[in-house]
Amino acid sequence: MKFAITGVTRSGNMGGAAMLLAAMQELSARHPGARFVLLSVLPDQDKPLLDPAIEVVAARPIPLLCLYLPLSIILWPLVRARSRMLAGIPYFRALFEADVVIDLCGIAFVDGRGLPLLAYNVACCLPAIAAGVPVAKLSQALGPFQSLANRTAGRWVLSRCRIVVARGAASLQHLRDLGIKAVMLPDTTFALDAGAALPSTGDRPLLVACPSEVVNRLCASAGISFEKEFADFLKAQITDGWRVLIVAHSLGCQGKNNDVSICQAICARLPSEHATMLTATEDPLRLRAVIGSADAFVGCRFHAVASALAMAVPSLVVGWSHKYREMVEMLQPGDWGMDYRDFSAAAVARRFNDLARDRSSIRAQIRERLPAVQDGARRNFVLATEACS
Image (cartoon, rainbow, N blue to C red; front, side, top):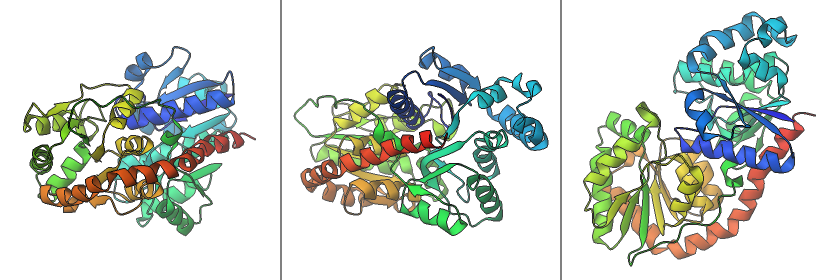
């Protein structure tokens, strides 16, 4: 079988990389000899990080949105007929040769994210739909669909996907309200076999912190100094006897997908004898192992939180979307989430003190729930295979 994968990259955001690795790991185990093609917005960065047997086809944003998507609409009959003319374009050839297109966008068709992202969500699926290739839109946050543009595009695309998987109850309800048939399963990265956590060293408990440039910008728009408040919170925990390790989970070249700068700025405010920053790594398995060594976790990047929970680390989450709540509720009992608009050193410290006090029982409860979540995550790939039949 040949699987075309879209919506993620191997480089940059390690959440996308983890989803990609989970997909290849699971599908290779289920289908020996399976072939993969990654339709990548960052082909030059992705190719060196992947096995040479994995085909990487360029689907850069400008050609994807300004050429491949319009051609799929304007030349729909030719795309459906899989014409030789279009097959001369590597992107369309990859679609025509695929048994199924697997869409791994972590979040899609959400109100308020802007028309460029909405167009990208459409472009991940529509060309394959035009070509008559089954599309499996695996576990992700979807909706709400209140705006006309998002509701119209979401209903048209999602109703034509062979499989649509919601990542939690809120997403599932949004889809039902839109009239879309869907199932609910955990995030695909919970299927990832990452091995054991790295051993923790030192005489202090370890707090792993994962700031996010996305939340930094959202806080700035709300008049909150994310950098100062996060650093002040971590200073207080160091005073209380914790060691701090800061992890950048998204390593994009620039903009909201680059967490390195905000992590460095926060780390620079902390006493170096008890605070360090993980040198940037593009190995999501190593990142998960590092996060797994923690006694507690505080973070903002969705898939950094997923890694913490997958390693049974008690976690406090600062987020901006229902996608965080959906995931945490599956594994960690209680209310351990905070909206960025309520973010302050004092507010985080109050919540973290409760988490730290109860971390042994919280870890035990995560471990009890984890096998069922992992089984559910693997179910995504069963459905992806069934989409071909």
